[in-house]
Image (cartoon, rainbow, N blue to C red; front, side, top):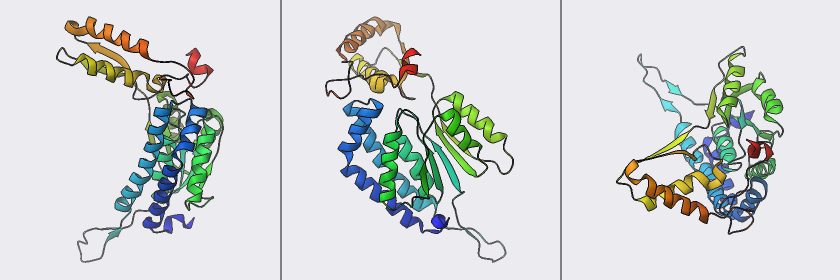
Length: 281
């Protein structure tokens, strides 16, 4: 496709237009996140802002990365490196940041001259489809960015295994990332790059000099924003024995203040888990 022959400045300008539009439509996208992903209003605002940041950041980065580089010519020849897109990228994004991570994956691939087939999480397709509409309206051709919705184990697996996939970006579980890695390794032809962001067990170590109020605030924010459904959420708190009893008592008090409920209410601090499977787990 002639998309990668476009000047990088033109592709970057599309991302910046999309960022400006997203800024102007922040309330609508927040409402979508509250409705479909069960985000609290505070988390929704932060996520839309992160998506805007991604669009502007990758526009800036691409103008640096995609600029031709003059290399040394040992025998007097002219020697210039022209970075080009690799081809069609498969972008598989999660439900816990269905706008920000989706937009970040797609924007980075597009602005560096690639085409994209995006597969959002099956729990949050509407946010992704609205994001794609916004990118199309900003000038990205419809055949350069396409969306496919459905289950990861069927639709996602078929996209990853497709012989024309030039690269895969994935955010989700370590288990699924390993499955994608094995699928790509089994393919014939050139090595297909995989960019994967997965979860972990996040720990906080607190020594006896820490201010308990700061510790408790940080723990509650990290462990319970998005109902704890983040790769960055705190899982393990290690307290020095001299302060442990006091901090645990304060933490219990702070947790009792959290309001659990419908995220459409501004009073809600912790919303529901994403679906029945997550709840059962």
